[in-house]
Length: 442
Image 1 (cartoon, rainbow, N blue to C red):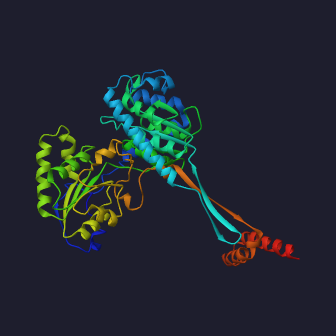
Image 2: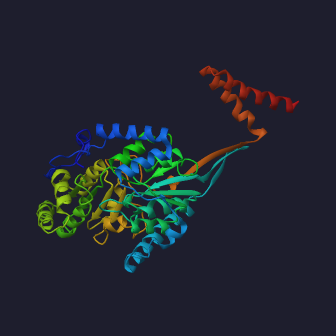
Image 3: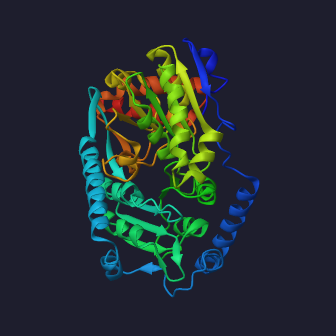
């Protein structure tokens, strides 16, 4: 995550790069071998059905169990082996995420307007009928993913939500991930991972119709499977490595800024972290502080390369320039730690989610404890798209109702336009109604 050469000429203020990324850019996501492997796997599973998907599960994930579906009784007991304190925290995250999603849904009301006398137009929100949620469970299982996907889909009114999560042993999945899925209210849960899980949901291999939409993060293979299946199913977004950016001024604390940058860098060795500051002193202090914190960080082997290769620090001459720079970066997560956070909130436009003040941290949202969603756009996509929310599972379906009296205000315009375009059938549908109207007048 660094300044885009195509856009920087349009920045009006002065800025300097205090720390440059060794690699920079958007980490490559579409490696040729990944694209080819996923394409072959999808083709094999589409032809071979669930048997082919299970063969991949046995080969790639060493699955040896009899059934991949978790029964309702199993799901009800899945949290028994977890520490009570962890269960309490997961329950809090699930409840808060659902509360925020329910409030979002309540604010989205059906709408109708009389465009002109006799012409009424409107829309009604209708949920996607069937959703599939992929819940990763690798080295760092993100336990709140189920809240953000399954739970939010249920808040939107989705009738059927199927969840898949990879095996973590020859006969079972990650207990904490499964407990989160239980709390989120999934209708069906399967211990199935990777491309084979995405394919099984998309092709309808799990005992019911294909899902209409697939959501949830995953590795490069899962992301590529979603990319290749887009169109056959809807998807949430194609997320790359997690990102964080911070806007800070001279009032910010270097230790806090450094900690929050590293808090996202440890997601993976390609996770970008960036600071834009109006204080040179803070910028240089943060660079030094990050090196100090890395020396004692257990995940230094991940966060260290991420900061070295994709970390950046920029000095901006004023807050207006800081906003210009950040709107170009369009980060997934954005923290604002300044003396006037509300000014930045009013003036920033491009980000996945923003965290205001030194008491906020991305980690609060990552773990589901503040209620907002952590499935967010990366790689500058926040310039055009938002993250996952209730609205992503709802379709505002329009309708119109036309009375006879409105015909003179509609049909002649359509006849003229369609005639000019040469679309005779369109012209006739309008002319037909003109004829009916005239006949009724006689």
